[in-house]
Image (tube, rainbow, N blue to C red; front, side, top):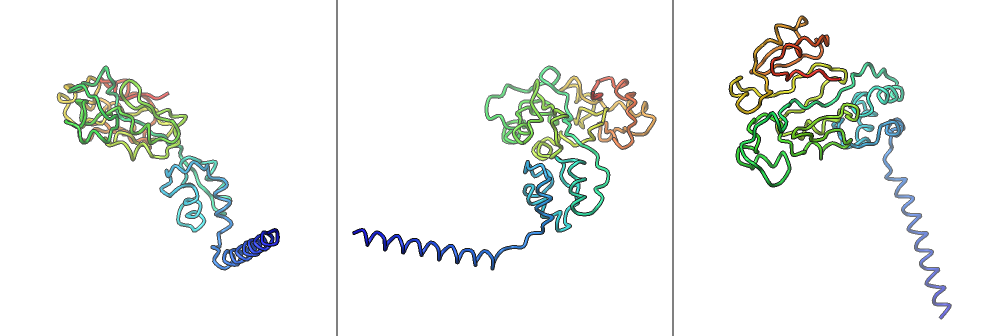
Length: 265
């Protein structure tokens, strides 16, 4: 009986060794050569795998950079410090990089924006496409406030406060997840050091804007007249600021009668 057990053990052991040997041969024969720079790049990337770079995670970006298919400053989360390290690995200059952040262009909170009806149901902004009127909010351009962007953010940098989404600029990594998720296209990436921003996206005429929200842009053009750097213009009944021209003087915000041009701290 003991002999049979020993024989079985020997057979299993020999079989295991043989399989291990064959696996080692196969791994050597079919192994994929990896650029050593790819592994180094992956080591300095943040590891959030947020997809903000446009690639499937940090490993995908590292491979693309090593192959020369993506710039060394492609990671929005790592910013300039990581870009500099990746540039050093690749032997290129990362160049200057402007830190960005997400901003929600809506001021229509629970007090200022009107609702057409009371809604009880699935709390998801994208689901509002199947709800009468596109949701309860009277302004068809405004933030729906059901937090699809909150769920999409991997950094806990955006929250719904008083009915509208608000970004924590210090926590935001500009990955763009919230931008892609918002069905109203209210969220955009702006420079971190931007001070004047327009908090409205309503393209209707002033009278129609006031009928649904007490704080919307009425396209009065007063902001344009105040700006000495030609950085703000009213297009399609809504003001837009060219951040590359803005000198942060604050005159447009001071003159705006509806106070939808905000001065960020």
